[in-house]
Image 1: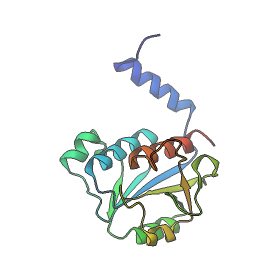
Image 2 (image 1 turned 30 degrees about the vertical axis):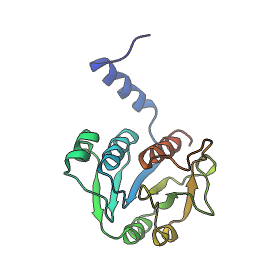
Image 3 (image 1 turned 180 degrees about the vertical axis):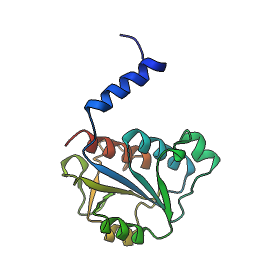
Image 4 (image 1 turned 60 degrees about the vertical axis):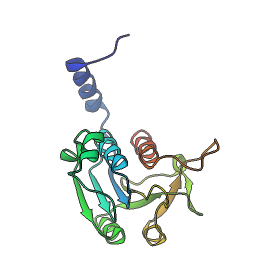
Length: 173
């Protein structure tokens, strides 16, 4: 076994994508994700997971931004994104486009992320690093999922949680 680099790596990934096309149209909505490093990480994950659009809302910083660009390795130039001040309006627009809105949040009616049947058009909503998703935004969502925590911590970093749910959706259809 040897690590893949350069042309061999590109061929390997290209061949995998040819036979393993995603079955979901995925969008991610960032509701006031405050830290540029998290936004950059989410751009990078969105590119890797083939997210069709990132919707940045509230106080979420937008590209171009030095930290977003560095951490995200300039994926903001590859991943379609838009800014909408009001996350509830953005959710309304996504619902009109046929998306089922899923909050990744610790909420009273949330179900474990791995037990939910994600519709073909799904928008995942993540919130502020400290405060989570606001009550108004959560009320606009169709459902909520959570990541079970088995240690002493109550939650994972926002970009890590989003990554886990995105890749779960991609590989359980």
